[in-house]
Image 1: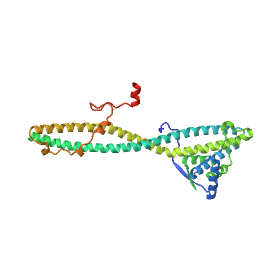
Image 2: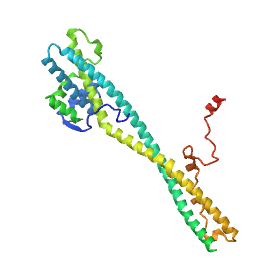
Image 3: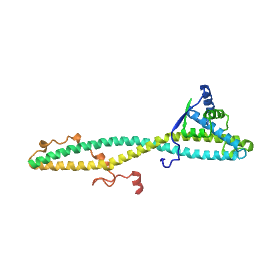
Image 4: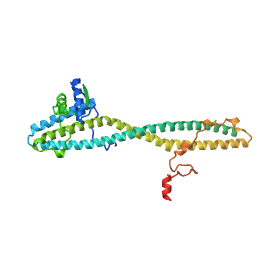
Length: 145
Length: 173
């Protein structure tokens, strides 16, 4: 997938959050995430996931506090939109990763080709220079002799 | 404990007045207690609707932001690889279609000119090897590879056309 056909992405710039989470709590979270089978298991992804999960709960709960009557419908719309965006983004990411794999393999093959072809070209240039010199000597001998 | 998030996501949290520690605590509290097998089109009746929607929305939102983090942070590598691939493809094309054929053609001409001069010197009773020693065989480049990679239409006269795949030939009969 070329960067032109890619969905709009935020800047890759990241910030580091320092979280106060004791090691035993992280072990417990890891265990619960594994049992649940939905949350990611590696620490970096799990912590990032938990921050965003919690933020989403807080956002939705605020929504309910603000719009007590229509909160269900609004949240349904949010969930629907988020799931659609997620599907599209996941597909685009998969395609981009696949293209990256192909590019990477092609780079290795083509770099090898360029290296071997460059050696041949250098040998040809070397031969051409030597022949030009010999031709000059032969021509001089013909003129002189 | 440190965790990296997209700067934009952190700005959004700050704009919404959500504290990261509070969000972490809320998210951690939900793991293992939320419903994760629901479908949006099958959320229950009025009593059950809000908690089901809440879990579905929060899970989708967290997952979306994980995918977006991975995609956004890897996108520069994707772009760099695509650019490098394009550059290499250009170099390969230039070597195959410009530099190498031109050099091969020049070498063929130089070799022919050398042979002509050697013949003329011999005709005058001179030994060309006494004038200038011939190039040792190891300095004579094998042009097969360069000529093999000539693009169509630039093959020297007498080059046989490329063989068609056997299956195709049989099919044509």
